[in-house]
Each structure stands twice: as structure tokens, then as C-alpha cells.
Length: 150
Image (cartoon, rainbow, N blue to C red; front, side, top):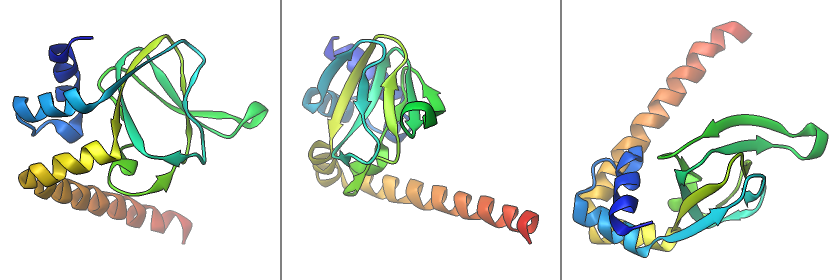
């Protein structure tokens, strides 16, 4: 993949949609590429998480459990960011990610993401606002369910 095609894929990611082209170029330049065949794991449930993955090509399933107990929770294609929480905090993987097709992925390490936040404080402010908005929306969803279980 070329740097320009990486920038085009990163531009599709909601978390990065406010970044300028030069900022996306820095992110793309510092990222790593991974090519996986169908059926391979990108990461495993409960593993230490130190990077997010952008799907550049193919489809990835998020799975909880193992063996016969494994359940596919969702499927994600090009432009999806997997594991975004680990970009801002140390955590473990709540799910496994398995390729459903041959895939090309862009790996963004936590250290690269932190460098972006340090070099572009306006991005950090925007990210903070987005996290706050999403938390408020989740709380509203939880409150709306409260009546069903009372």
C-alpha cells in the first residue's frame, strides 16, 4: 500500500476525520502494515492491548469466547478502527479479532497515537470532546433501559 492510499483509508476512520492531510500523513508514516490470511487472529481476547488496527482491506470479526462457546459479536470492513480504547489507556482486549477474508491492516501503536496528541493539542481537545459525547450517549442508553428492568 502507498502512503497516499493509507491516508485515504485513515481519513475514513471517524476518530481521525478531523485531522488535516499532513497530520494523517504523519500517522500513516509511523504506522505498521500487517497482511493476514482468512482465519488468522489479529489479536486475542484478554491479551494486553498496545495498538489499534485499521482495516484497510478485507473483513474482520470481533469474537467473544473460544471454541464452541465463541460468538461473533460484529463484523468490520475497510475504514474500521479496532481496539481504539487501547490507544488512550492501558487495557486488555475484551474480544478476539479474527480475519474473515484475507486482510490488510494498519497497526497504530499507543506510543504513535500519544505522539499525535502531544504534537497536535487541538486533536487532543477534539478527542476529549468526542469521548465525553459518547459517554453521555451511552449513559442515556443505559438510563432508557432502566425502566425495562424495574
